[in-house]
Image (cartoon, rainbow, N blue to C red):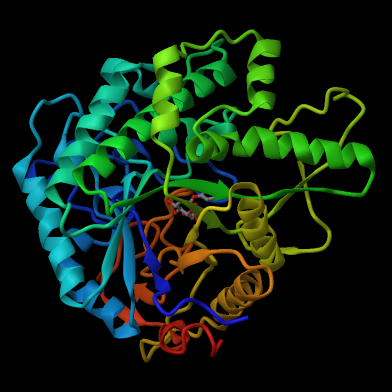
Length: 476
Ligand code: P53
């Protein structure tokens, strides 16, 4: 019944494209994040054909972390971070994606960033691909629909594993690889896999093909990483939104089981090294005929991940309907509002108990170490005249989630490595491109139109989280 481990990895999480800015500095190439404009709740971000003059692309400047990181890392150190999760922008290392040699200026940037973290004993936790693949790979190769992308990704992974083998121990391959289960919308397939669908294409089949290539690439990266440094801990990264049955009607329950199959088979492949039978049967029923070789299947078995990283923000609910006798799950149609929980201003259902459920779900299935690498409350903050922000609602959200995570550890016995709340410093929202959907302990003076001084200030949650870390999760 002890609490969190003594070496529990408390920290915070961000992604390169959402905060670095410097989109053309140090030889960086254009990424998929650089061709997305800002949207808002209910209005999707526009994906443009290349960068168009006169349009506003919020990721181009981000919060200028590229130039300001020493000051920001110092604030993280002041909160007592044990780790800092960020990603390496693929386009800083391979600007177009298909070069043979990495870009030295990009490599040097991350050397400097990691040194800055290590100076404060902050362990970097690094995602290789976090919604920021080179745009050139999209226009020239079709993104992950093309098998050749595996080779480009593995070259990138080997270059950074080799370069940072003494500085980085914790890695993840693909951020929220399963977001693309929502293939009927444009955002997830594009950000996960660089997929631009043409009218009339079989979106679902192409998504499964792309995901298969990513899973093979992930396994090859895991294998290569362990050869470079056997101490590496390389995980997967799953967007965990458990799909509850709306009622205890057996058909609702079965609808939920199917939904979980469609959203989480990705984790089965990463962790176990083979496809679950239900997924193979689904491919057969749909006559997808994917390009999946015997060699691919051997590679998957050799590259199982060391831990399961996952994000948790919300839970979903679903129900069976008469027009859907096979109880097939379509994320754009099958979700319903859960009457038992409240939602954020962006419609994300707030459900702390769902985090305990999720930890149990993963641990029951896999018995592998778990790492909560994102969790947080996107909300509108008000900067007071004296420079403070009273974000008591964020403290309540995080505290409630940490209490449930503690029960999962103490009562249920799950093996939890760490907790890195999302957007520990305000940054550009991935889903909407907004600045006003804020998650941070640190406020950044910048608005949705890109105006502001970029000055940093501490919110009320800053000192609160500092005490959470100091007390190893005892004082919430
Ligand atoms: P934003 C959807 C559902 C769950 C997590 O999201 C998601 C998304 C995509 O919007 O993304 C993750 O910024 C992602 C981060 C992202 C964060 O959650 O839309 O890994 O890049 O910023 C929060 O509020």
